[in-house]
Length: 132
Length: 499
Image 1: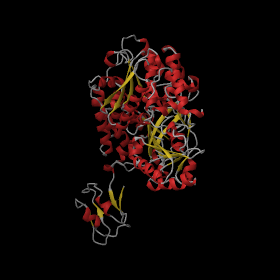
Image 2: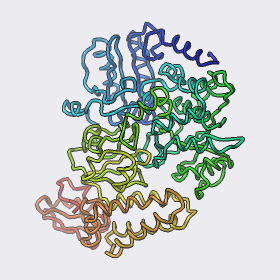
Image 3: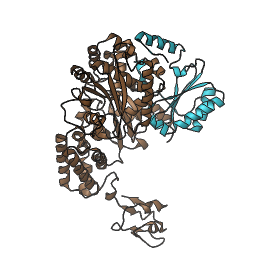
Image 4: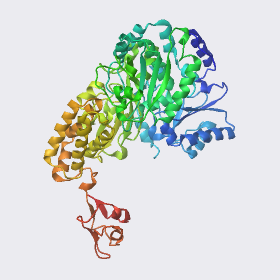
């Protein structure tokens, strides 16, 4: 745990964190090919995100898929909770809504393993600060 | 919940929203400070502490045009300047996380999804006004937000972003949590401060403003969660950038909790100046089940309802007030043709009566009387004079209440009366509820053609109001009927209806 003692140290520290070349460091293990983000705010948890998190964690390991699983805050799609975002190597992130065990299984088998299109994709409807 | 059809997916427009306050929500792991740092976290604080003076810091906030996101829209930079100018040995920064509007969850989502952005902004504010201590006043009903804030504060201390000699400078700042018991009035800054001091959560007259005499009598700057969440970005991208988004007088974006009868209920962030139509019909995907839009309540119990004619109004502080509502903290409850506006007004008044602290008479007694009048009208016992009473009493409460709660609590009544006077008339004169909501104005009725005379309803009726021969149509006697609905539940032929 570094203690940052100056602005320059913060800059250096950030550079180091970014060396992995990943967008954020939960994707830190440089060789992990798949990133699965699960919205884990109060509302998401009420809709069952906790179970999806457990399912994803166990099943991805069982099925031998090297993935980094991240719990995030609210993604904003309350009507479609639980929502998860999957990033495959070299591809744009894709958000899936209405995820239950069956859908989660589907996403692993069809989308993550074979890159096939799966129902329930939510188009990104906002601009990020970086895009402006 | 059904999955979206192809059409529905296509109907969601791309990129009407801009995420500034929500920039990291749903993107980073809120429990890992490293991810926040990678997203340029604590860079604004670092730059300000090493390169800018408090005055320059405040100048940038003023230049950005940022206004308070808690509802009133007071210019944030100006608020900070007042706190800076008041000299004192001790000053405080307070983050108002006492989110209490029914159906609103903007602040909770920010705190759960990106707690560090609020911590960083509070430290920036502390430096700007000369405070070394910050408090987050958060309601105890938000356990996950509290948990994530605690984790974030611990991490920030370990990294040296909170504590002594931050970034190797002479600036010290630390943040602590204060829990609220979930009283709506404690969102009012003076009541909030009294609650923090361990006293009753009651407001007091301003002036003195908290910037002069706040927590423990010291100069205190109170800002809302969303206001703080905007601060680090303003310093990363510059005030001109922020000013470039929004309308003439309202800059940047606003987060709304879109709820009620829309297809895409959700947490959204749109640039100021976006129209209500765009929010409801494009981002929100329109009204559920293809029903007709009737009204949208903004500003929660303090706001008013906006109707069809306001749909193309660009959302900003001034426009919403001109329409008889207000920005509020960002709750947006959409209502369709099935909602009765008189009972909507009664619902909000019920909330206000419950939440009024009771310190001043207009709010304590007046709102109770308003509620009783509305209740009478909903029960079909209203008279035409009641409508005048409603209006007069509303104006008196607004003019004479001590704090923002009472000054705004009659707004739902006034705005529904302005926009849906015919519904009030139906309730009072015709004793009918056009939307079919007010139970006392409805009666259970058996449609002769549908009734097969099975006697199921008559056997279910607890008061013996239903009569009729076997295999002949039955009849409900409205004089005896207690409107329990047991007959409707039992009928397999849809013969029992409410009318």
